[in-house]
Image (tube, rainbow, N blue to C red):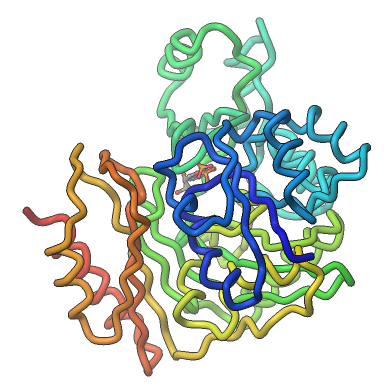
Length: 380
Ligand code: ADP
């Protein structure tokens, strides 16, 4: 497998560029705009929305295998292509239970994996009775197309819930309600599975979100060996049961009493694994290409005692490329700045990230470095 078609051309596809070169793999991307980051590193581009299955048919004609950097695809239409022999990795059956957050929760709980209590909102039902078992706050989530906290709402009372549902009036079945987990920390784990069923797992990391958006990642997370083992067991069980080929990201909650719950599955490379570009022998992006190309998997272990990754999120609408700030960030010892080459900044948009590598396991220093990076980036 030498030609990999990638559905989606954002930063996740862009970060496959270096690995593709190293492995001698060609990337062809399907993405709506020629301003999208991965267009710059792709051998060829099909300019189309990610859910345009006719475009994916053209992509298939140029590729040996098709993979995803964005899962908001039209699975039904793609399954016709699969029936005609197009090779998708991961296979479409591995995506099918995950694209709707309610189906995903059902799949995870049927597998026996620990998840928050949840239910779907049905039309015309007595909401008050249904949520009687849950204490406020609760979490309301769009079942489809949520990302970076878009579509996730923390709701403090019944009136606000009803108001929110009326505002989004057209179809309440688009929502899922779940128990609010007063987590102690959020964790994530990246795992990859090969064509032969080999599974490799990256170190469990701590992720820090603000307003539901990932701001920082610290690798490894400072948790007990039992908690690491629990997170790894979740990853094995999930990837094996779905027979995944490729990389998956798994977001977890760690509760105050030490329990690990699954929050969300990303059926692709994930923001919580960006540290691996600089801190691991095989990055999540190379690992993903290795898996989908049928190559043996690489070494996922951390090559440094600690890595801290900070997202550079847009804080204004602008065309700036922030040269000056990027230079200041690059001057931090052991810092690597990754700039996605987006031509427009908007509040909350992921424009790049910085990873700093430490020789000692020192979470306090890691937090201080994250603060320094954010001070440079967000101060005017
Ligand atoms: P998205 O798909 O938009 O990333 P997530 O379901 O991952 O949405 O939620 C984003 C963030 O919202 C989580 O990282 C967490 O901080 C918070 N969150 C989500 N679900 C819950 C929950 N049940 N309890 C507490 N916080 C939650």
